[in-house]
Length: 198
Image 1 (cartoon, rainbow, N blue to C red):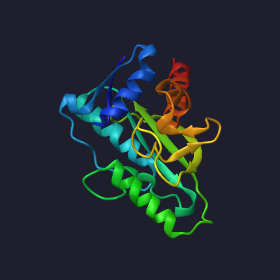
Image 2: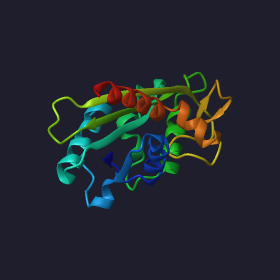
Image 3: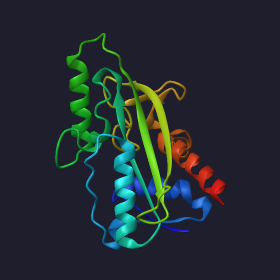
Image 4: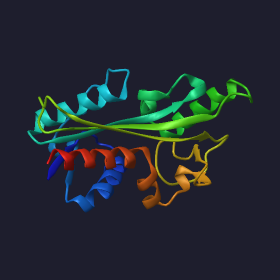
């Protein structure tokens, strides 16, 4: 199956291609097809993912896959949430986002909860006006470290410590990250639903 990915994030594309490759799905980044990024005006992951998927499908005429994901920190009321990629403003910068997050947690004092989780909502539409989009969600829980650890991954991966792995997300081997991650969970659920649809 040929799908358009409603994202131009090269690292996300690589991660999703690795997860979907065994299924025989060909994932094409929307930028390769001349699709500009959709607006993401909504306050929830699911609404933004749906908007991106419908936009990519409308422009290309192909089935589309979109994910909206981010980090939710308990002590910050769920922030950075849907603005995770742009938390420190434009232009997007993982390093500046991480610095801002650590500064905001530090300002709350040493007793503030460090609990946080990654969220990923993946939406699949057969066409732009699909009345029954498939929606799958995954969460990956951990705690925010006092300083970044690891060079792998992207985004907030160096800051989220996963207790059962005994390490930060950025230090995990790619295969383990794909298997355990919020995105890996959401994709696995999406694949189950696609198979069920027959």
